[in-house]
Image 1 (cartoon, helix red, strand yellow):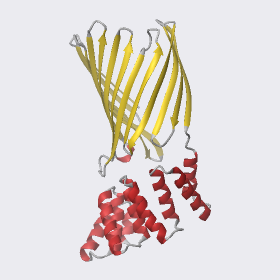
Image 2: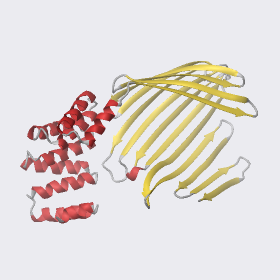
Image 3: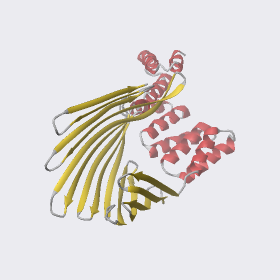
Length: 371
């Protein structure tokens, strides 16, 4: 058909126009409405696609292809329980259809029912032993680990202060899909002194899109690391049916550090935007305050905005593109200062620009370009 030809050419807008023209002639054409639901879903207009699919199912309730399409858009909108109900309707109609069973397995994964998802993948493989998607899904579930242990070391040498060495051990445990704990212990050598610390934290997923982390640290500080720490972080995720912003992760964090003779509070808010074609944009605002034993205070703030790297295919070769723009500011009780670091673009070359006003009143800028 003409619609199918436009889809094969990736001309979704043109295909949708043809479908709309057909529906103006015959609004009761359920095949055209099914196509309209698919095209809207492929353009990430999921709420509109859901409405179109439901309209078709009022007239043709046992159309498994439309039921699968509706389950997909419900899953993409985070309506996982509704998606499972819809795909169960399709499974009753055709209990051996691989596409229906694979969708059910994916929905069960989204619902964090790993055991049932694993069982569903095995059922698909029993019917279709060469099904690659079922093999991949089952392998991914089998690779889930409850505990993760990491060991790291870092060594540096400086002319003025001598060697600096760090050895750290991390243990992360995923007790349930909602509850995770993390512990790390480290030894730090600075200025001829050796200090040790123990940091622990716990993360609880309040809902599918919300999480809360809290923790603290104690140390034998030797005046080179904080005596103790405490922190918490709240995170929230959002999904948008928007052509410009597809998702957002936002977090708020407070972190206290206690040193010998002073303590520091850091407050940070971060937003990570998911943009089309694999791009992301991060905006982070940080404030800090240091309070000394004599009551003297010193504050600082910073704003950072950065576009993170994205892989794309250009001329048959994979290319990494990166764009970064940063603005930092800081202040002290007796002396303000700010700086601008921006315009870093890399695509078959590199362009950078740095600018900084100095306290002596001289504005200095530097730029470079490399291919």
